[in-house]
Image 1 (cartoon, each protein chain N blue to C red):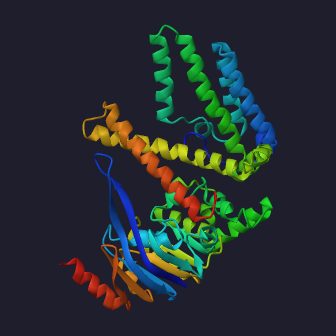
Image 2 (tube, one colour):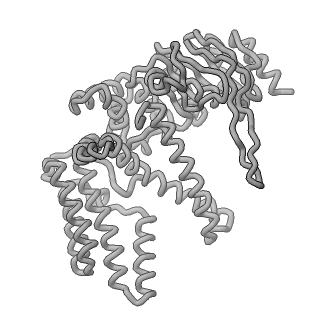
Image 3 (cartoon, rainbow over the protein chains, first blue to last red):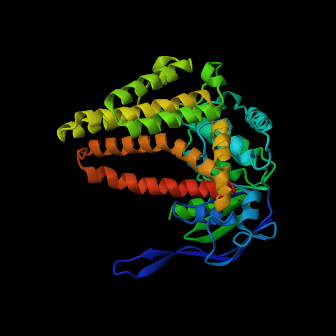
Length: 234
Length: 201
């Protein structure tokens, strides 16, 4: 379960003359997320990514508290990150080593010390996702969809309880969007996903609409998506 | 894109069977001696040996010996600059050592899986525990550095092309400024990716 208690995030913006002003990215967020699949929708710069990044402590709230399964994302950051896997928009930012199998091995390094076992497990995980042929390929030679699936496999290798995905299909073509969308839909873990893909959001159990740093709608997907359409067409 | 180090190519060549420690030692000996001796004949001899070593990995020569345009440009500029200052042989030594170092490291990366390279680095860096430095972090840092070099070369080429498209291809500031800004952004993204995976904490 993910809980936001009166969470606000502000950042300092340097101004000429040495003075700083502040910008509010999130304000007064109170939420409890228990649903299996939660979609977060909103315009660019609305605060979706910041909201997601507070869930695994990549961004610390300026005030208030975010907790995952009772753990504070700031005080217990390391434990939280072991339970919350984060998928970035651009998988090239996320993949840390040169080939798919090496990157997954990196995720397994803490759990499996034996090199041979680790490699076998990494190859098995890739095969489970239909990526066996990509194992030894350079991450630069993979398609966008393959890269995102390898990134997802790397995160799943850490066996997290929650997956947070920040616009994972934004850079993908339609075919790869479906591929990654299906992979995300099949996850057993709780999934919180920020997206501009309203078809993907419609399949969630709950949708949150973020606008100017606030949650302006939350609930059944179709109602929230209709509200979002209305908000954006004003 | 990855034309600097080349990736591991599975095989059964002599170099594939040679222990990773030996390969690191050969590479280090070649690079260090090339810098210390600093003689054109010595550098060219090492360059010839490094080419033979790459060919001994049994990969197709066109793959093993390919060179990125950015590196060729750097080598040409080095020779040109040193010639301009009246020391053309120094230019040959510097450029030759650079290309030799690339081929020597390529001999290592083509014939050794990345995970074996990292494990060897971690093992070699284990003495750093005395200074409270985790060898695993050293291994990871070097691996990320290796992965980042082709990425940064590609970034530089992209920015250079964007500047040329706007008629500012010769304006160094128009290329270097966005390159530095985007390199810092890339470093921050990599840091976030490490934190998100619970690595480096």
